[in-house]
Image 1 (spheres, rainbow, N blue to C red):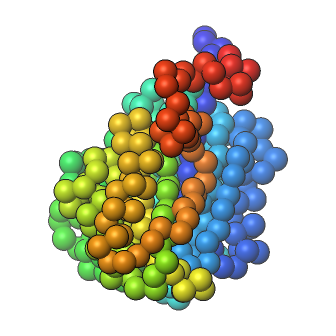
Image 2: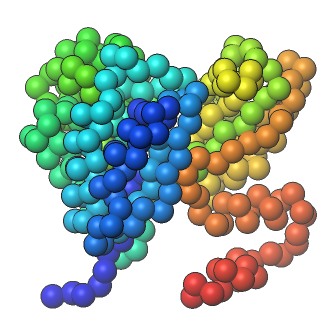
Length: 301
């Protein structure tokens, strides 16, 4: 029997970013558990969303995720939820990412196990997406989520959108959840000095791949009401093929036509070191740079 330790990353997104006591209760199953390490969690008031990053042994991570899903179902009522980020469930999305000694096929199997258990234990219907998708139409999370919570009860009645685990209905207060397996992505948001959501949406449309923009980039416009600005909120699904700086520079170019400036950016959750190094090398104009020149990288060898 092999003693090689497998490591999986999971980045569940919960539809609560305002009541921090609720968030703490939801993420508690990831604390103090053998085989599970809580790396990071962040909340956003405008998005009304919490993004959690955990790593660990597949079976231990699975049990912790299932327990967190139970608490989220108890704590979050989607009939009362408001937020700028698209969402369809209390636990909106649960992606598994193979990190070490684990194949994508194994991550897919883990996603299916979690989906099946969430349905059987909590009557929470599940869509499988990305690499775990049951058909090509369900690979893209944006397509799966289209209609959001408010339109999902009607959407799942159509045969082509029957949940992968479920009975053709959504959970009355927790909605529906997407569970899948994917490569690492970077949640990258760029802020604009404008309060006009229409401008952010137009820029996002020109930047995202779906509308003819950058490959491996998904994007939407979001209003940050508390700050009186808007942002282009992106998921960079393969930073090795479409670098962060390309998206950043393209947004600056598109913003000029509206007389709008980029005033900052943010990273949600964790990201691979290489994604930042690549961007730093571009802006510094460093020649012939190698990851072997990064001190922390060499220390991890």
